[in-house]
Image 1 (cartoon, rainbow over the protein chains, first blue to last red):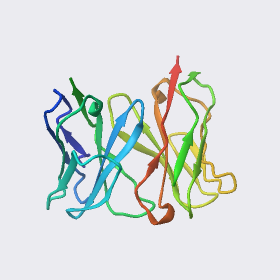
Image 2: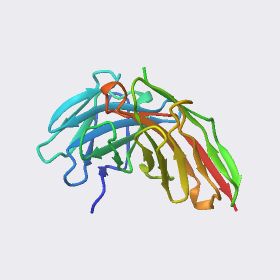
Image 3: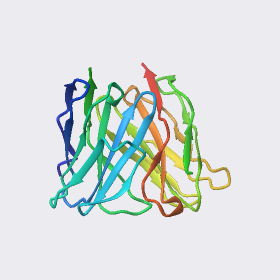
Length: 114
Length: 113
């Protein structure tokens, strides 16, 4: 079956612009999480959606937002981009929400802010 | 809060060498423990997991045992291959009622022929 698909794979923006990243989860998966990965901070949790509701949010400023649609596809948006937002943004989906939850990750969207 | 500590990398080995990547954790309750692997240019993928104390997770020759007494989940492989070169992440979830995973910083493994 198809894996988690993230688009675009690469993008370059300038400071002050905004960006929208898309994630299509595995069919049947209702939970979608987003992570920011940087060499300095590692993997940092952004937010998690389940059945179109944001259930958990990490410690990121309000410039970072997201949403989930009825087909479980998700988007995240970053407004007023800063140089420090340059990172690999990873989306992960899972079948349910439990402690033994296994995440399936996409290949990521690599954002470069100039 | 919950945390996962992994050994610093990179770990550099010759092919067929024995691998150990240390992972210890701090958590409330009884979390599930995971190892994920990230190959160059890809996202993370599950390597193995263990959901209770003394469980051993295994996959592709890799093993890790959930040690509650030492709060550890060290990853081992008896004979590494060049294709095992990747970044390995230890993670936990389910501690204190939260199902959002906490990841370690990752350990880069480089295997030379």
